[in-house]
View (cartoon, helix red, strand yellow):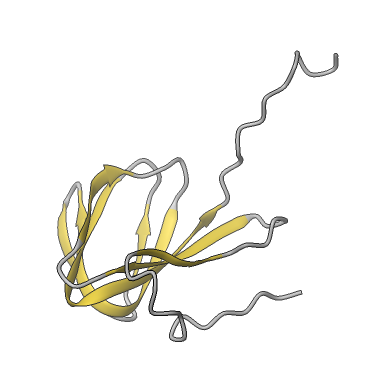
Length: 116
């Protein structure tokens, strides 16, 4: 069954962080709608072990990478390869962007070697 959401119709709270995420447990992709209020930022950091696609849905700002800074505006799409540096700064109208990446497997604790 398809999972539908509308990125333009998200609640006003929380004002910062993930305002929407896929909740379906049997999935191979993760996706989050991230919101940053005007002037706020996500400090530069090294990305996870998955390639991440971002799509700017509202507002604007700046993508900070190892190679420099790129302006972000609605409709922009960027591929952030795994383990690369990235950070975000929201502009005067804030920034909302959708992330899409392969789902990372959670750690599972086993009691012994496989096959025991």
